[in-house]
Length: 159
Image (cartoon, rainbow, N blue to C red; front, side, top):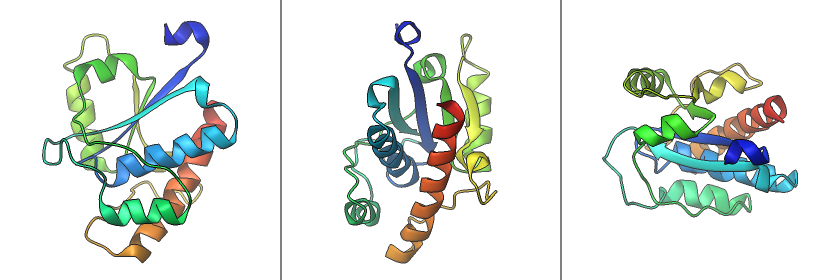
């Protein structure tokens, strides 16, 4: 149905889905809302692991989003086989995520998702989005700027 109404879809993925991927999802959702195209996108995020399933985003990340006036409402979940079949793009944060996703996608018969590093869209050509989970607010701010740049570039490229 999504294809019929011109909807695009993107799933942001990291290891636990409480830090990098839900924040990226929130940043991207705000960008498409600011561009007045929120109805043209299905946006979600998911984890590779089951470590954090059912938990809300990390408090540093929530505080970073509040500071930038970006709403974030997400509960961690693990990626499913259906995700590979229903999302146009699966964008992940590092090489370990990419390896895991490529391995899993090989077990999905009808994988239609383009699996890429989110950083490959970044203007700074920093392919890896380091996990700020063990860092402080300023680490999150550095990564926030990276998320923002990558998300803007991704949106422009797929617009």
